[in-house]
Length: 274
Image: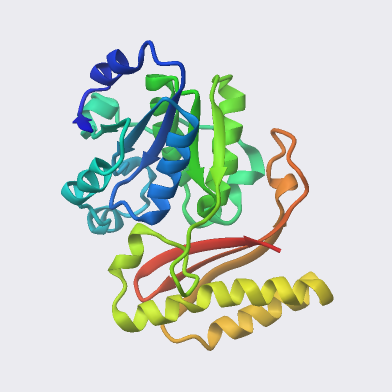
């Protein structure tokens, strides 16, 4: 496994390969990322793993500064896997002199949940993902379902821009207590980490309540329970039919519960099918 800072060097390596998988990451790799990479390896001849903390998708310079980075450890984890090409660009390689967000029009979809809480975030995500897809023209690109709204947006982006790539959504990988794996988890202290373990319990309770209660009753109960959890401040709890979210393409009807909260100063998101 070699790490490259120039996409042109990588393009030379994959030019004659039958199938290429792309796994975009912001580094600080954990088992969730590795599960995406292993899936990509099972379905493609070569796999490109990008490691880049994209400044355009952060709403706060402080959040960008605090985002965990450990490139040495990331590359060591990738060393254990074969047929991996690591792409580790700097800002100049990624954006040249034009560090501007591209503006996408995905309608009301980007004005709820993450779009509402983090204005401009999805434009930043879309900008970097579109750049990566155009750079490498992969056969398949892999994204986790933990960021489900982002996954839907990327599928919509690919359709709108007429990019020839298959977007693969992969199941959320969880810690032993059910907390969704995230690079931000390592920023939690012990007390906060214990509180974060309640997030999946709220979502699981919502699943049970939804079977026998109204949407309003379910949300009211979850909001009440969230108030009782130490260190946890709820930003939103929503239940949506994901086929309504993905108005840009056909998707099976599926009801999901979505949650975003701050545990201490660390923002976490999660979702489950209910």
